Image (cartoon, rainbow over all chains, first blue to last red; front, side, top):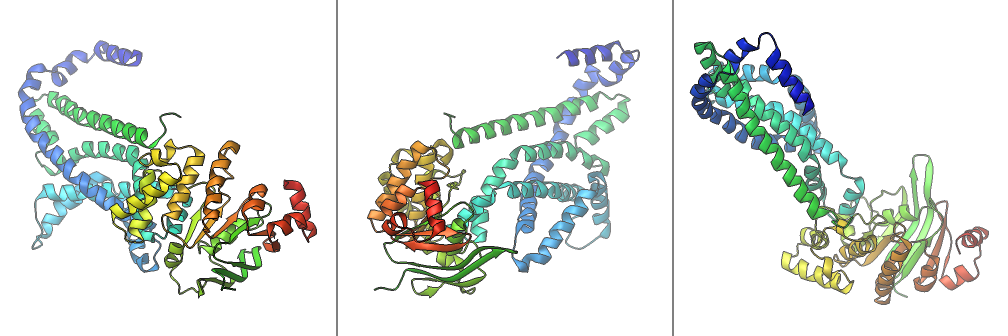
Length: 250
Length: 244
């Protein structure tokens, strides 16, 4: 609280504040741009919702491939390692640019040239690599005695993964996963570099036209309004899980 | 005399240079309760893990019901359906209720319907005093209750042999009794068991055969009266004088 107080005081008392207030905190421009931003924000939300599901699928598939022990899957394991190493190394913004402009330029039959789709693919590939590592950490954190116990009951390796290891792993990685998803919510803004009319590109367009940056602040508020409920929802989810699985008496 | 249910011949197991089991011969007949005693690191747990094929063996044979299960072509899952194990640390699945812990393997491995698996599990849970905890998750239970639940989970597969690996070692002294009472009950029902234990009084009461392991070998074995009353080996006497 004290910190925020000092920060606000510093901001307000700064010599350039009058000019900043005019170009960043103008209520008239805020009111004028909020409707357009809201309708274009839907692009970000849609991208996030669709990518999130696909990222979970990609991430878990890659993690399970890396965790597999069967010798026949060795080539897939190598592929999974290469995928994570390469995709995690490329800045997401570059991947968005490469796929968003590159793939439609190939003019391949049967592939869509919709840049929004390719931007989504770029986000899925980039975040899939991160989430795969999160899942893998969760899988590795399940104690070997759990696996021994499942095998002693006659479960196959696949059944052990499906019924014993993965459910426990997923519960443990929910906080880091949420962290990645908040990050993804914000990174949907990267599609604006392709000129796709999401909330950020709309705000940029509006700002350039009116010589006023207030829409950027409005967009920021929209993103905050999206990320905070996600965080609270996951807190609630975790608390409920803990309450169910652990002793109230302890 | 009938053929033994479980027969081990010349079993040898090493981790790298370190030999943990050597020349182990063991015959377990239906209805037997075989207690493995010996100090920590004598190979009791490893022997049990070998019997369930959780550990590969280096040499020797293990026969279950006349079939060689140490044959590498045998599917270990086939064997584990017949050989139940309970571990020292219970190893219940924390994300599943007690009931689901008990029905997972019967449903997935034996292909029982949910209803059949649940009614069988409920019956056993009731019988072993866990009727109130059927829908609780394991963390809500005391150590003794968890270990009893782990026993029920193993029993739900209707194994022909039950392997118990120091199942009371992690329990508070006052909880040991409730678990041992259950094992006594199973012994009275002629359930065939091989158990590693530090509970000498229990071994003396319940065992049909006691084996003393020392440095990976069964140094001495026999009925409890003989092994506890008149041990042949100097090392057995030394061990018993320390623990009794």
